Image (cartoon, rainbow, N blue to C red; front, side):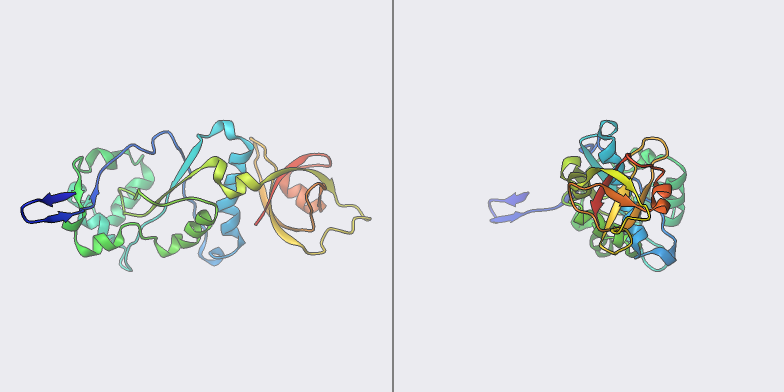
Amino acid sequence: MHASRELKIHNKIHVLSQCHDLTGNSLLTSFYVVPELVGTAWSELNSRGRLLFVASHPERFADSVVTEIVGYSDEQGDSPFWDAIGRNFFDLNYAAAERLCGLKSRTFLAELMPHYPIYVPLLPDAAQEAMGQVHPRAQITFDILMREGFETDHYIDIFDGGPTLHAKVSGIRSIAQSRLVPVKIETAQSSDVGTGGRLYLVANGLLQDYRAVLLELDWAPGRPVVLSLQAADALGVGEGASVRIVAV
């Protein structure tokens, strides 16, 4: 807040400051989907399959998780946010800095970025408009995680200004709504397999050789989940094993 009693002016000025509020949270890292599979069920499988791993092994994760979503860059691959701030301290264009981030820990960003608050109105308009914006190639992942209960309120990435999402593990939909269900393997007499139904994410829950698949199942709570031999083999489970299941 900047105010002058004499002039009767009160202005709220937004500032950017480095912080350690999210230190100690578990980090969901990004993944790459080949262009021909973007927008298909593979995005759901990759985004939500890892959440069922968290549900299966909560002792290995913090109570909260965060993930950094790729920020806006233009058709030439330039990031207005990076050009306005980071480039002044690194003397690297956005593409070169992105490669460096992929090869090394991102700790160097915090080390070389300014440690004093940055007044947002002093940034170029393009940089201000890029703050909190999602790159089109990350929009699907962003939407999936928002439906899962992640929030984006106060934090942006120090690198490209993209949103940083955060959530309590206990409040993430796929984790809270998932159930451990016994497995029944399809036999010649099984009539409720392959008859359509709802799409489910199913995971074997193992620490070693963790696997998750998307299956159309005719399943109801309180019943075993009936898997075809092919699905059971893909999951690496047998009759009587338990799988973790959640509706997509």
